[in-house]
Amino acid sequence: MTTRTDTVPEAGPGPAREASRATAAPRRRRRPAWLPYLPYLLPGAVAFVVVIGYPFAMNVYYSLFKWRGGMAPMRWYGLGNYADLMHDSAFWTSFQNSIAMVLAMVVAPTVIGLVLAAVLFDYLGRRFGPRVAAFLRATYYLPQILPVAVAGVLWNWILNAQTGALNVILRGIGIENPPNWLGDTTTALPSVMLVLIWVQIGYPVVIFMSALQRVDPELYEAAELDGAGWWRRFRAITIPQIRPETFVVTLTCTVAALKVFGPIYVLTRGGPESSTLVPSYYSYLNFFDKSKVGYGAAVATVLTLVIIVVAVVILALQSRAERREQEGR
Amino acid sequence: MSTVTTTPTAGGTPAVPAPSSGSRRPLRATRQDERYRRGVGRWFVLAAAILVALLMLSPFVIMVLNAFKSPAEYSQDGPLSIPKELYLEGVQNFWTRTNFPQKLWNSVFISALVAVFGTLLSLLSAYAIGVGRIKGRLWIVTLFLVANMLPQEALIYPLFDMAQKVGLSNSQWSIIIIFTVIQAAFGTYLLASVLGTFPPALLEAAQLDGAGRWRILWQVVYPIVKPTLGVLMIFFFIWTWNEFFIPLVMLTTNDTQTIPIALASLQGDRMMDAPTTNAGALVSLVPALIFFLIFQRTLTRGVTAGAVK
Image (cartoon, rainbow over the protein chains, first blue to last red):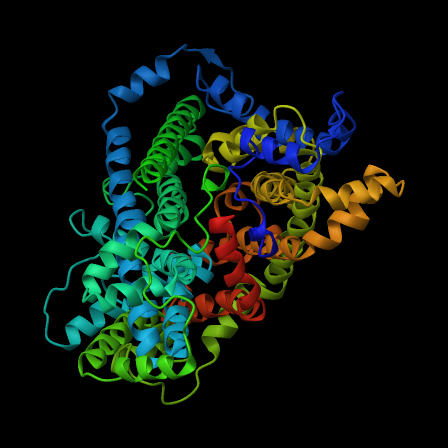
């Protein structure tokens, strides 16, 4: 990964690469030279079909039935499960909460992470030395390395209404009735969001800081000589220069936010009163708690579609931004 | 993720012409540094950054403080006091209740095998795609990427069913197989783009020497991408270690479960008082922390590589 940056910048396995390859090796045989490589793809292809392709197809198939799972009879229901979803308020709540998850796992961490990374790299790193910056970065990254279920269990205790650390502290400083953070419909979702921001923030900080190392320092020096303040430099240089990484972070985190399950499971189990219900947990509930397998499969299928659509939109935005940048320059 | 479509402009295209490009003599650099080191504002910024760091660390601090504090002392002095004496029953409780050594072994066993198998599978597929330039490779890579984005809920019930049919219900092998494939989907995508830029001259030289594809893979390609494979293995290990959903569903008895599942399944248990919960969280994160510290350098490089590659 590190050694290969010196080759011609290529746009992935596409025509551009093909062209550069043709010039590099002009006398390539015309007959399909790739054919003998097929056996190397075989294990991966078989494994993919068995573990991902077939189960996914079966899940879609299940979603067309009413089925209580196991040996119970499957009754054909057509698109009925999907029609039922449209009138299911819990389903809509779960996707509404997905928006909150995107705010907590994508928007907030990206914005905060961008500022933190820029401050660490461009400000503190230069004034107090790179060691200070590296140390601070490590503390921000720490929550990322612990298993998310462990983080959830810890926070579940901290936020516990009676015995949790937070409320004991709050009572200690004289607050009579501290909120039941995870047990109240008004505070549960914001509490979960705060925990997720805490978990998530280290990822953009690390990515953005390494992205900034790629930026030519003379850009900053030149801008500074021209009298641009920190904020101007941040907006005019930092943000445009690290746009590729911003897209990577946005895409990976958005997919993760739409899929989020573990933290919800250990923090609130979707409660109270569905106030923190998310699609993945709702589908899990239907599968293994309510024994409504067909319905759960339908929820999972819809979630898959939403994720793919969102990912395609983000990728399209990215390639448009790139095209614009190339035209602009 | 975006690597198929993006190549970040390495070094950036200097939009602003740098006035003194190429002449960064040490003398000037020191003067520059000195200028940076003046001013009071920087202390405020540092204080703010440290405040954020403290906020990030506070749950860990609270956890450590209360993992070794007796319940009586907790109810008397609260969560912020430093324990007067070392109370080890929390750790003991958790250790014996979960049979921790077994959970640790389960987690290590599953994650290590997934790391090895997943990397191997990625290498084979990526060799065919990146070096062999299989027809339709763009579609294959896209398919793998989409697979990586799928919510596991959309696979779990059929997988659960299949595992039962082939006698792998509640078996760690079902987890190992599933995650080998899921991780390899990402690994193939990443490695294929790395191998796509493999110097053709090297391959041709090996071909002229009469080496077959199998030998080229192991004697030419493998030694060169070894560092990348190392990063990939570390990633796969950690990702699998932290996995929650599929192990939760598939591993139904105590003796097969992994650390995160064991900890989560103790939740709501009467035995889980403050020290036990905190000790449990602490003990559960120690292996991940040790692993992280050992491979920190490789990892931070890898996070970067994963982002731009």
